[in-house]
Each structure stands twice: as C-alpha cells, then as structure tokens.
Length: 357
Image 1: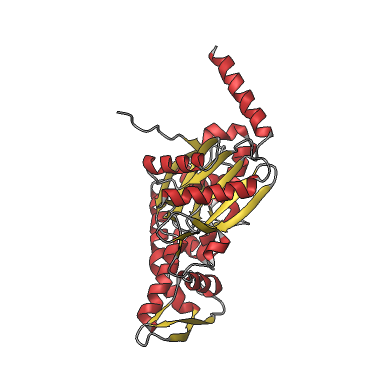
Image 2: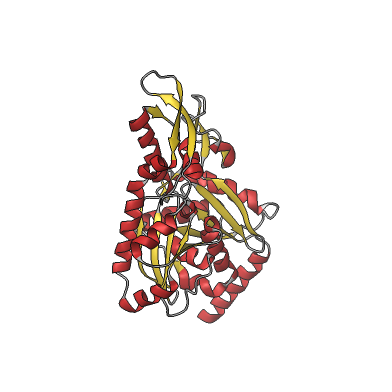
C-alpha cells in the first residue's frame, strides 16, 4: 500500500511538473539568481527591496531597488532583507521571493513551482525553516534545500559522486563556504560570515580613516571591482573616488591606488585564508592526498577578486582554479539537481518540523 501511495504521489508531482516552471534559487545576500528547468539561468538581480517607510508596502525589487540605495527620500527605504546569507527580515524576503517567482513563472500561474534553494552550510535549523517557509508562502508547492558548497561543486562539474576528495571555496556576498566533498556528501565544511560585503565595508573604513572621506556601499563595491586585488598586480592601478568630506561635510574627490585597496582588504582575506587552512587540517589523509592532484576550485562572485587564486595557492601549496563562471556556479548546481532526480535526495538537506507542544 505504501509503495502504491509513493507511486501515485510521484506520478502526481510529475504531472504537475509538466505545467510548472520548476526552479532553482541562489538566495544570496548580495544577489538572487534563478534557474528555470529547461531554460537555464533566467534572472540575476540584487537582493534589495524598496519599501514605503513605516509599512511593508513594496515599491521596488531587485535592480530598480538597488539604484535607490543611499538615494531614497524620507518616505522610501531601500533594504537588503538577507544578511550573512540568512534571512534578516522574514516578511520582506517573502515579498522579494514572490516577486522573483512571479517574474520567471510567467503565464503558468495555475500550478505552483517546485523549488530548490541553496543555503549556507552553517545555518541553524530555525534559519533553514525560515527559508523554507518564506518560499512556500511566496508560492512554491515543494521546497528542497541544498547547501551552497554542494550546489557550487555540482554547478562547476566536480565529480562529487566519486570516492575522491573535491574541495570548493565559494565566496558570496555574505558568507564564504569551504567544503571537502566525496561520495556525494560533505566530509568537512566551514561557513564564515565574511564575503564580498565585508570587503566593501573594509574599503569604506579604510577611506574613512585614511582620507576622512565617507562613501556608500555601491561606491565601495565599484572600487573593489575596478582596482581591488588580493595579490600584487603586474601593473598597479589608480582610481578617482568621490565621497563626502567628514570634516567639512562637503563633496570631495580623492585618488586611491590598488595597493591601498589591497591593504584595506587584508583582514577579510586573512579570515578566508585561515578558514581554508583549518579545513585542510581537518580533511582525512586519504582525501588530502587527492587534493594534491585535484586542487581547490573557487566559485562565487568573491573569487573574481584579482589574484585571490594566486594568494590561496601560495598559502596552501595546492593548485587553485577559478570556475569558468563563478557567479552562476551555485544556481547552476540547483538546476542540475532539478534536472537529475537522482541527485535530489542524495544532496538536499532535511528541515526538521517545528516542535509542537
């Protein structure tokens, strides 16, 4: 009887799948990416929501809302509902997810999609439940969660199901995920709440202390992209930066160098290096031997920082490769899981039901 029920349930889900756009979501601190089954990555927008002050009335989401950061009048607030890879504002995250789901689900409104969502490996059961509940309330018919390093490893094409050690470093906006994977399981993982956002904050602090100039998050990110580096460059660069003079209170322009920004980034980079070394120390000897051949693969937007692969290789003595498209590695991993049902139960993580009194 139980087998018949399972058969009927699977058949029903299969039929529903024919009429819905099942999707994988990389719900990131900085950006949200959506993969639709059969179509690939269809959306990449900032995880930002603009709301009317004192209410939960959403005025804009994604790219449009990000343009409002630091520029809104008093009655509109542009906020990022995700912090350090987890939900900081449940209601706003739900509104953001609903917006993205509707945007990509298009005309197929009668059948709710099945969704695979990537989550940081270090989050609590309460935080997992918050992600699952948000997605269900936003319109998902079924939600599966997958740890980001596992999704990234699948997305970049690592042979995770083989009995060999694979190491991945995924540097996102709010977290850095480091994991050693073998036989479709995570042997050891570390998640630290340091990523691209911390790098941006380090740049803001450096300019404040060194030049008495205050800049915003968008400007700091722009500096990081244009002249940021983790390793000395063959040709160092300069950039003119505009901000507000903290003494005079007036607009001010200063010229900064890539060496200065590298100095500013030392603290977050050191934290990532230390966590990488701890992960290697905790890796079983047999898998450590594999890593000499396999090396380390880097994913996530943070791995695009110039020279970060050289820095990690120099510090660990292992070959380090940056994925071909590191920004979409995690969301492509969720897509592969959707496309290959065999993966689904092997690599997704269970969410415990709420305790009932």
